[in-house]
Image 1 (spheres, rainbow, N blue to C red):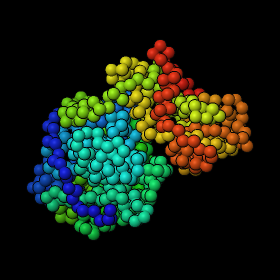
Image 2 (image 1 turned 135 degrees about the horizontal axis):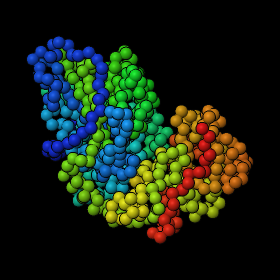
Image 3 (image 1 turned 90 degrees about the vertical axis):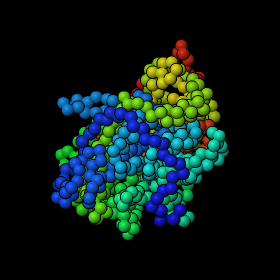
Length: 606
């Protein structure tokens, strides 16, 4: 794909008629606290409302955005389906949110009266998806986004879970190379462009997809540049990024901003699949208190401070957080940086005031707010039909019971009950492949949802269905066995809190029998107390050999664990969901369900 992209993305199909349904929204205030427009902007213009500025020099452009949908077409359950809202008195409450039927209604209602409206996304639209989408390689989600009217998105790291060829199929269409067509007609692909400005083919040195795209309407032009995080190879399987190079986000955005400027496109939005860590988990907190951008930290803060002032706003993602911040650009001017949580629970509504005289955005007039995708609005009928159609295909597989639990098994915390359960399942599976298997390690990022006791459908409380198991572990990683010395095993544990994981530790979930102390009062690798590491009560022998089970992502050194890639005598087993299914089936019944593990294998000193 050449670096130069056409300014229009041809649509193969007409969008569905926008639903004129009532949509209740909960709004968080987030605006650039800056001067009013020049006096000439107000002359002869209507007041700001649904249509906003639409006469003379200035034209309001509505930018609706969201990120990290991860194929969540049905309303997500448990904590994954709620957002926290801070109240005027400082207390908080939770609101059930999400579901493509409701997201469609909210977006369609938000567009009413806005003749200049763009819908954009910040990556991870697919990947790590629940069974309804993941079972069909995310074709249902692409179809839903087409109906939703998505105009453009960046790629995220999860778009590479199945490799660049599969991403190209999602963009361009065609049936799956091994599973074929799921329906009578061939899959048509995305109506919207995926942007991958910083993802290069190692052989050609060019982006594998379009680096940018330009939205045009009646003389108004807005350019979009899409990038994913440079560290994508560290969090995606090696096979998924084979033959690809991921370049610096800032350098790439700045490069293509110059190219757009040369083409006369002065209004530019960066879609960045990298994010930050807000100071509050409430979606509507003031991210600019006490000063602009003071409520946000993490990679996106550094990116935003260095991206050229030619870029007028950043739509971000990856951290699944909610924020609307104004982070100063390199020229010291405040610039909007937004993220709409994940799983379709929020969307962001940003007003970009376009100056027809300059072709640029009047930054002092930018306003933005996150809105909750509440479930008290009518469902979009076309989305209901889409879900019903795919559910019919998935039901025979997804509704099958694979185990029983006595209560919620959560994935939260440094060591989680669900993490322990999965590690135990992989240890048990490893022993069926090699009785000498000693322990199992599981990365917390691979656990995508909790197991909830309440029934998600008609299966009954406490029943774990295949669909629920798939939602927990959707990556189809294999369970691999490798040999490590005791010294290597201790090094792996130290890599949880050192090197690339020092700033944001990734604490592995461990199987029964492995114990150690994590001293958080110390720094770096010293947080793992070496003398405390034991297996079945015995100290680890640094010269002995230990047989370790882990998923293929970890075994390949993923998540910043290079020592795991150094193991020997590898045996590749079945996928990790099979291991979990076998464990639940063998160790639970309706009369004797599994109790949530105690999560007491790691002793934490704080």
